[in-house]
Length: 110
Image (cartoon, rainbow, N blue to C red):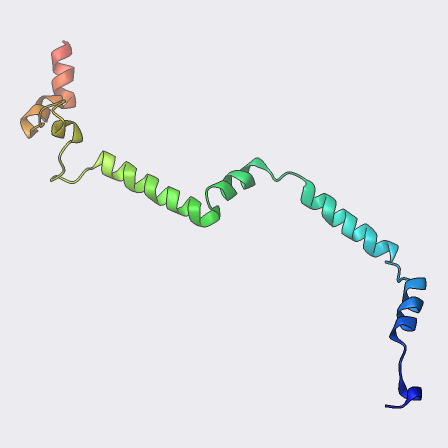
């Protein structure tokens, strides 16, 4: 390498430091507007939806609610009442529900 082929990198850096590039005012205004938009609080429904896991979490909760409601309204015939297991009540039989028809209540009233 000859002496004339050498490149003074520090001199190039000095020239660049003397005149730093400026950001256009329009770009700076757009960046500031985007930052302001991100700082606004989200609506309450969006925060609640995010808290439960988004649309997938909401779908799971709806499915579990419907299944729980269905099992509460029409439980399978073979299920045992949890209160019977701990001795709080006795096992109900079909004879226990025979007198609960609407006609029976109406006729007993008078």
